[in-house]
Image 1 (cartoon, rainbow, N blue to C red):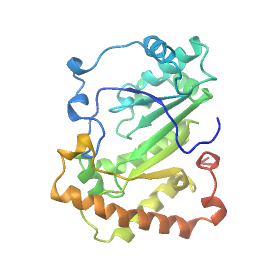
Image 2: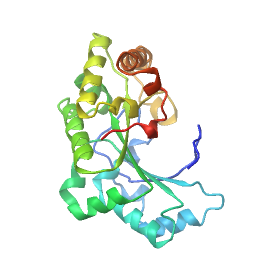
Image 3: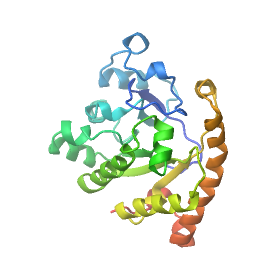
Length: 256
């Protein structure tokens, strides 16, 4: 696929999530698995809807919510694309908020292998903060779940051959020891794979329609602190990688 700065995608969303990130682009009522604001569709029906669109994008993004609450969904979409003769024409992308291990618990090794062998598939894993405090602040979840993200990412790296990428949200309600915490975070990423930070993209959080009603004094402050945090992130990468490595396209970075 030709490299572009801007891309369009057809997004299908799983209407459920176990977290409530304050900056989520999805209204909370659409994350509660509420059938009054969502619907049941088979994978074939979703692909039929996609194919019915004129000038459709060449990317399908399986998002949420949390797609991994139903890990078979991704496999079933792969199979539906193959049945429709579109597996080589469409790039399939799925989001993963690193909150469950259902992929390994609910699918068989053979099913995971089939997903790994699917040619046009990428998976982006989102780290919700760079330390326990920022994680809890961002997700409203237990701080201990921050460590679990690394455990899940390790399994994805070791037990699959998925084409993996990452996001990180750098919002936090305190700038105490920002440099030290960022260094620790990058250390932990590199402990999983030396080049993993080069495949992780910091996401800038902004106030927009769904988030405006959720804003508080601390969250407004977090929008400002993230600018310092991204500077620390860039400094860490500059100190660990060569100019050549930093200039490589993200998809050329080797993880395994």
